[in-house]
Amino acid sequence: MAIKNTQFKKGQVPHNKGKTKESYEPQKRSSKAREREDINKRKDDIINLYINKKKSQCEISKIIGCDFVVINRILKENKIEIRPQSYYLKRQVSHNKGKTYEELYGKKRAKEMIEDMKRRSLGKTWEELYGKAKTKEMRKQLQRGEINKQEDYIIDLYVDKNKTQSEIAKTLRCSITIINRILKENKIKINPQSFYTTGRESPRKGKTFKEYYGKEKAREISEKMSKTLREDKVSRKGKTYEEYYGKDRAKLLSEKMSKAHKGMESLKKGKTHEELYGKEKAGEISEKISKGLNGRKSPMKGKTYEEYYGKDIAKELKKNLIKLRSKRVTPTKDTTIELKIQDFLTKLRLEFVTHKYMNIKNAYQCDILIPKQIKILEDSSMIEIKQKTIIECDGDYFHGNPTKYNAEDIVCFNMKAKDRWKIDNNRTQELETDGFRVIRLWESEIRQMELSDLRMAVTV
Image 1 (spheres, rainbow, N blue to C red):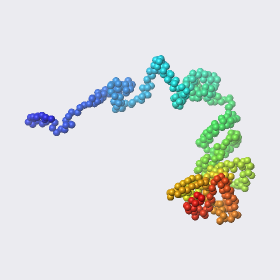
Image 2 (cartoon, rainbow, N blue to C red):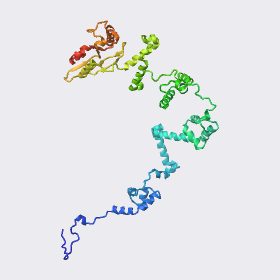
Image 3 (cartoon, one colour):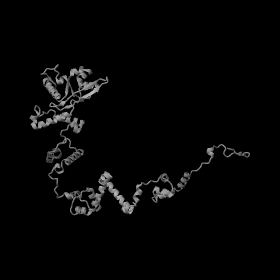
Image 4 (tube, rainbow, N blue to C red):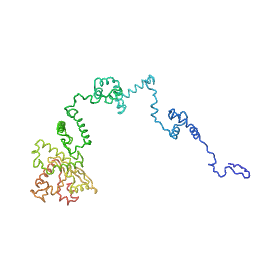
């Protein structure tokens, strides 16, 4: 590129001396910058259109010929509150309002659309077509429309025939709120409840909740009533009915309660205190009962269930006790000998269940039950349990170890050793007949036992 040979006069300084190329070259103004300047000049027009003439941002952008975002920015800079979209939708009137398909689309197009809609909805319910929420709304709208047509009939029933709102709602099969709305819209005075009750006999008079409402409804009502009584500020705690209500009122209440509860199943039936109230509350209740009974002699002491309750009730009680004992784990903590055997079984990788209820004649909870299984150990050796096996960890004192106790010696639970042996032998025989293998280990044996000894006992 050829450099021009410029001649400078004496004392003349070049105009670009000490300046870089970037700072010297005049910056080119973009077309966008010019547009912004033009729009900013028209700020007042934009604000006037938006506030006074109630135009939307889209409409203003079309009038001025700029982007929607620019209008939005100007309004925000001037701290003008942006209106929601619903503001404009309310003012708009649908272009197809009050017109038929034929008027909008023509005869041919309308026929095609109707046939297409019929094909889609053929053999389908509203739920399948529109969904549950939409169908609910549609049904409500239809119901409202039908009931609004019967306004005169509703007013006639309420004013002339003195029917209640609930009675009218039942006849028309709608909610009370709809009847109430129609009456208020027509400026009809709502009668108080006393207007209907005076001089009338209650249809519930002399009937229990169960007789009037049925079992399920009666239970719900009684539960609600009990909740309100609990939440009531006036506490009746530690007082009798006579102290709280007086003798006459107490008699009436007790008679009503006895009638209401006759033949009704108790909600507490077959449940423990822990199941009903939780552990903490159950503990408090048991303490209170023990304190109350302290020093009293039990009327059942020295008597059997049959002697005290009679044969029929005794049978039911025994059945219930067996059911409760089957669910209850006894003892609550495993003994040291049981824990040792459990630890050995886990080392041998054998699956087992503790305190399994055995439903035999002399039903009880076994200590450990091992199901059929094949396991491979770390040393690649194999253990096979061919038969369902029960391990009983018998304590020397609890079960009367014959090496330490004679037949007539008294062991745990004030029982003779021979009677304890008889119960244990009967259980083993019953289990063996049911296809179980029973291994009975004494406490003194377990304490000296090693892992290899148990492995031999289990796999034989």
